[in-house]
Length: 391
Image (cartoon, rainbow, N blue to C red; front, side, top):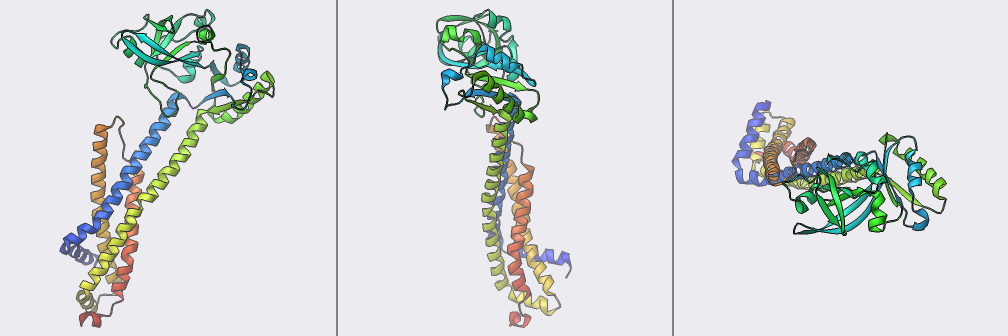
């Protein structure tokens, strides 16, 4: 029997039982939509978070005092900071002293995060500064200057003015704004960004906010591929500087990013596996439809075998019918998925790009599953006795 004739018979059977056929492919459509949409959202979320890590800088490390140590013995000094900065391969280093306060200005009230940093902090974090950042001169002279986030500019200094040269009051101390950060306002992924950050010279943190010594250091290195080597060198240097009783935790953004990507890959794989269950269920449904179809078409099967149709012809006929269910369900499922992603893009601030991997996986998995479940009815039909079928 020619392939073209087998295809015609398959389409005729599909169109003859429209309601049954539609109900059979609904499971396929739902499975395809679930896999494509869920994987698209997951992969785009992974890319977004990875880009957030890259934006901050994957060559960045930070040193903090361990919880299980005597904090007083572990506090670092400017001399310690200077010694660490001389380690070969360290590009930039800055203390990171944090205090929280409230600003009341221009009929606006709100909490802010004050961060005492050095002039090198700008290069570690790759901050897009309008105006100028904290300088060595500001630090040495303990000047009351600050760099503010764009949110602070909009809330406390009016959004349509250039804030450079304006003054803000923090804990009854007047600070002159010398620059502002034009960047994404939040970073919930890494928690390094805050929408209401104020950067000041770290040298004034003790005088105004009572923070004595350095307990948090941020630094960048020249090669992110040697992060583990730098961690060993830093640990040994701290041991020499502070002794064995002082304990520190050294972490890096690249390691956090790699841990995140590993976890997210597992989540994506698990999600794809779970959503594929609906395709297996739809395959079982198609198998049942084909088994019902065989019982209804015994006379047709017997007649074809009586006039010379081989077992392989009967198998191909029912496999093509199973394939038609797959093709129609996949086509409709992909169209609806694209439509849903377009709708999500209209209402979401993040633009989703459809996952090509999800298209390949859903299409191939659906086709294979339906052919597998269609094979049993096809073999059963091919083994039927033509005489019994014609009685």
